[in-house]
Image 1 (cartoon, helix red, strand yellow):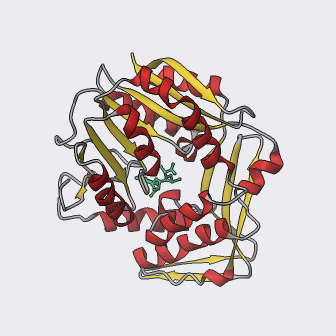
Image 2 (cartoon, rainbow, N blue to C red; image 1 turned 120 degrees about the horizontal axis):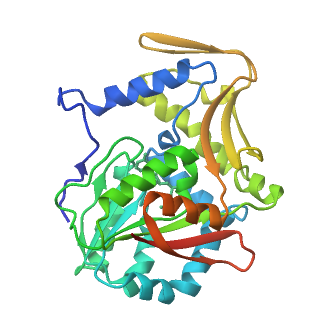
Length: 325
Ligand SMILES: C[S@@+](CC[C@H](N)C(=O)[O-])C[C@H]1O[C@@H](n2cnc3c(N)ncnc32)[C@H](O)[C@@H]1O
């Protein structure tokens, strides 16, 4: 593993000096100025946000992580037979890399490529993982995959298998999800595939509780985005003036997370400001829920076929492996 975590997000080719924070800052400011303000869920993940997400995964209300883990525990040998050994395993939004690490003993990848925007958080986990699995080449990358991305040459071209667990695909609107799947298909060559976790449509109460837990950990995770944004653009969001809102929108089949102003608030940043009326919100995350059929169709449209899906007994979650076709 190289000591330096490489930054692979595409920058402005005409001016390589334009640094990413300028583009990111412009994106945040544009989102805050919209009539219905919004911020990308990628801003949930600074180092504290990544730790808070790990805490969410431990909550009794947050069924996706443990349900997906059950599926892997039960069906991993079957998945491994389909996928085969010696892959280049590309873990999108790897976080603490814990899910991929559980695949290693059966998948025996040649190379592991964890990718995350919250790179500081990922770095230490990759170091420890490399000690446990010294024979696997590990190539961690700092990359924002919500914008156009490409894999660097260090990523082996053979048998690229994208690993995208946790139903993170649900953070994209369906049309963006398709674009993203197509990008993976283009990057994975003819002998690759995708192993993807998908949260399924289920009872409203379960969905709502998973994103609005009794301890308020998800609320802290959502509110922490304001501190992250303060640091990036020099804004003066006061976290205490905002509250967390999460609900299932059945028309669009998605959980929506918002931050709602508790009172009239003026937020300032160098060169700009925004007045939020009491009750006005900032839309911070969507989490679309799918059926296996719909996701399989999406995968097919993107160029992945021969899909096999595994689910838990309650049909709350599914893991799908599909091959590049
Ligand atoms: C919901 S967590 C999932 C973590 C882990 N894969 C799991 O399934 O538990 C999403 C992960 O993706 C990363 N992430 C979110 N948006 C990203 C982006 N645009 N580019 C790269 N990584 C991103 C976050 O930092 C975080 O580690």
